[in-house]
Amino acid sequence: MHSVRFTAESSSDGVVERDFLVGEIPGVLWAPASGADHAPIVLVGHNGGMHKKAPGLRARALHAAAAWGFNVVAIDAPGHGDRPRTDEDEDERARTEIRQAVTARDTPRFAAASVRFTASLAEQAVAEWRATLDALQALPQIGPDAPVGYGGGISMGTAIGVRLTAVEPRITAAIFGGGFFVDEPVITAARQITVPVQFLLPWDDEHADRSSGLALFDAFASAEKTLHANPGDHRTVRWVGLDDTFLSRHLGRV
Image (cartoon, one colour):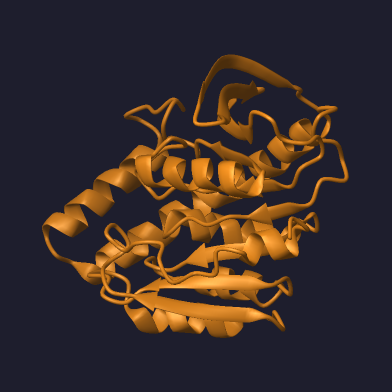
């Protein structure tokens, strides 16, 4: 198992931000400067085409660390952020096809290419998230008994997060979001999820029909699940209307 290697550190407004590597996986850990050891861990996924310090993600992470005392973690998905990309690899060909489909306004082609690309990426990303969680829980200030939640991510962040939550028993509550093409493997994974779930649905996404988001919400086997729909597409929807105490209640901070 790879250990965590911290590579940079900064702090502001009572939160310490530390860049790290787990093997070749680049990530960032936000933690309260005066927080207690063994605080809950919240994993946050970024959208497709973005990275671990995307402005909206970082803002939510800073708030969760400052307001609730969480250790908040993000990693770059394969081929994103500080991860290497090549013009020859299959992922780059998929990105090209997605861009061409968007330009041509060819929704069926865009949907098929997006599903293939996300499925390929998610298989690797789930394994990397689990390796990162293993490494973080080996740190004495976090420890193996720290509660774990999945803290959101529209589109790709949820496509990965649903698959991760379905197979990772350490995750005991999750926040997901719509705005992507939901295929049968994602629905199958959702049916395995029984932890409490909050789901944010972009009501006006130009590509992913809202019915697919409703189908995903319906598939969650959780006894406690809530749906929040906001105007806008997955790029502009704001994280408003969600219960701000949801993760804190389920991770033992209130």
